[in-house]
Length: 112
Image 1 (cartoon, rainbow, N blue to C red):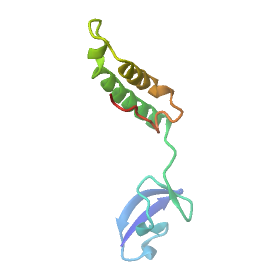
Image 2 (image 1 turned 180 degrees about the vertical axis):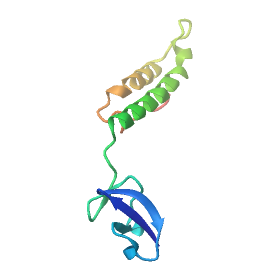
Image 3 (image 1 turned 90 degrees about the vertical axis):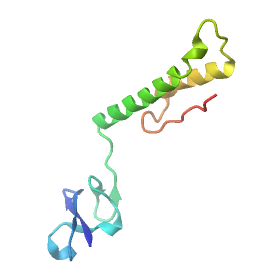
Image 4 (image 1 turned 60 degrees about the vertical axis):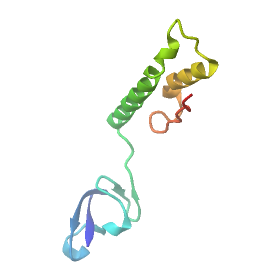
């Protein structure tokens, strides 16, 4: 059977064992959880993201946003008339970083 090794309330490893009595601090892995998850004695949960995690997520979202804006730059040329829908779409992309859930929860605007 697979078992999680719990150290200081956190899953540090998953190992194959014949019995949970093999060593202290083992939890049946079929209960869920994965390496890095927290264990409170009855439930697994994901740890809160660190400041570094949030910065990486934010950079990833900005990169995707910038790519989507770049894909519409043609419509921003002076000799092309940009319609209202495209203007709204581009502004919504720029405003992504102001969303309440940024960078964890993003509502992407619909492409036009």
